[in-house]
Image 1 (cartoon, rainbow, N blue to C red):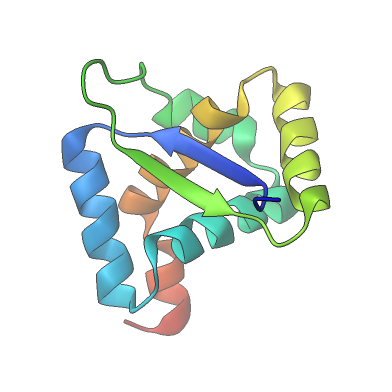
Image 2 (tube, rainbow, N blue to C red):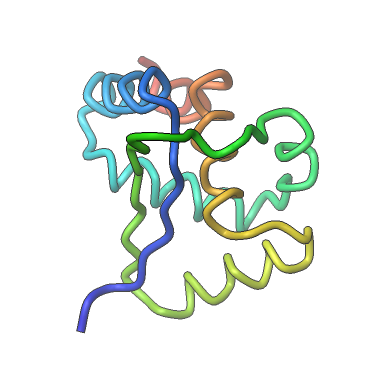
Length: 112
C-alpha cells in the first residue's frame, strides 16, 4: 500500500524555485513539503495563508509537489484542517508551498 500523500500544483516558476530552495537546504522536495504540512497543522495559519497565497491552479502542464506522510493520521488531520477552512487539501498545500517561498521559515530556522 502506498503512503498517504498531500500534493499541490504550482506554476513552472514556483515549482523550479521550490526545488532550488529544497536543494539549498539539502533536503528533498518531498521532505520540505512534508515539514510545511506538519508545521501548518501545528501553527493553524491556513485561513490567513489562503488570503495571501491562494492562486488559481495552473493550466497546461502542472508541476506537482508531493508530501509523503508516514502516518495516515497525518493526512487525515490535514484534510480535517482544510475542511475547517473550507479549502481543498491540494489547493491548501499549493498555498503553503508558495508561502514558504516568500517567508523562508525553514531557512531561518536552520540558520542558512
